[in-house]
Image (tube, rainbow, N blue to C red; front, side, top):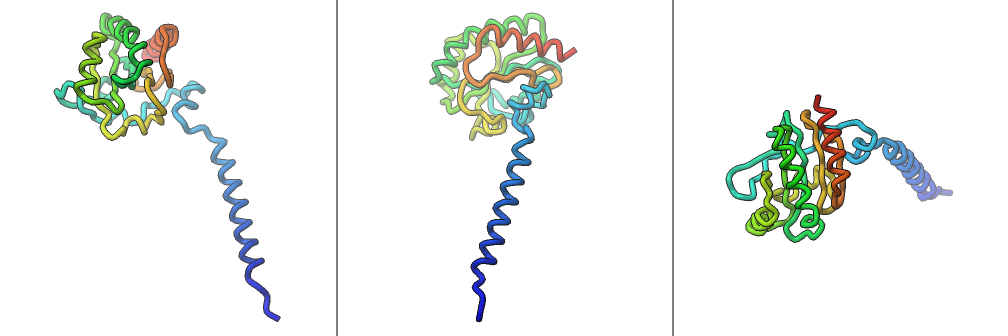
Length: 185
């Protein structure tokens, strides 16, 4: 009498699935996202900081890393984004404060935007800080971004001290910049 191979194969498949489940649970227990690291005070380096992106005015390329040694507030925005427009005056006010004492700068990163519309938006809100185009959403993906606006506050060592996915308010931004100042010394 010949035995069927089906029960043996089913047992092997079941064992493999259990092993995969155990592996998944073990790996899931490790926080690896940028958000988790910042929430736990780990101060991770900004992923993609060395990625050189074209300036919206066409004058060359800029990376977040090019501002190393200064506080940098990276703000992902789009000219079509209403919350981006709502927070724009706050960004420029805080940019003026950082620039006045030579402590740092904001860096705008456009998402899915047409260059001339980005320029018009920056002009409308009086942006004095540089903005770049994130071609093919390379930086956006590295940051685990999910929408716009999103803001990442870096200390002078390029470490993320605070982030907000969604529209920011004055309290968040001022606290985050104060944290970046304290962390930079």
